[in-house]
Amino acid sequence: ISRCNLLNIEGQLMLAQGRNQEVVSLGEEVMKLMDDRLPMPARLQAYTNMATAFEKLGDNQSALQYFRQSRALEDSIFRTRQTYYFNELEARFNRNQKTQELALLDAQNELQATRIKQQSRLLLYGGLALFVIIGLLAFLAQLVGRVRTQNQVITAALAAKEVLMREIHHRVKN
Image (cartoon, helix red, strand yellow):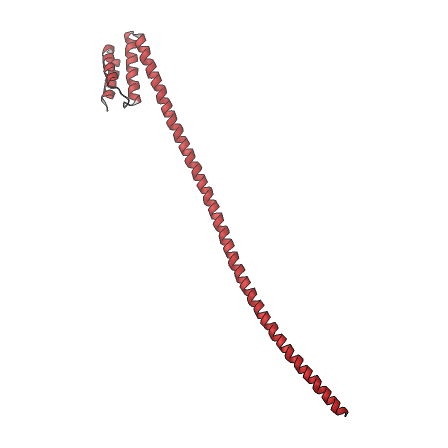
């Protein structure tokens, strides 16, 4: 606990005991020790102690001055807390929004990966089917070649047979 905090606590005890003039002296000492590093609640307590002491002493002008300073500090504390909570909520909202965006992107990536797998399978099966069709076409081409060759052999044999038949017919006739 800082020296200012101890003096503030002592001032509250003195106020409770009705030692108002001592509270003012103590408050002036606290005001001298005060700087920007002193937390706002400690400064607020010092201003409140001084305002209460001056009010009880009947110095309403000084009491009003310290009361206004305490209210201004309360407003500042409130705005600081409000800004902190607002920033916290905004950060939480942004974090949730980013989490949702990441989840959406993950879902899109999974969908894209599934599509790529399907396309890969389709290409693989299409390639296999094409390979089989080319094999069948090559087999059919070979078969057609054999049939043509056999047809040529049969046609040549038929032509030779006809020639022989005419020859035999001619000889039988003569």
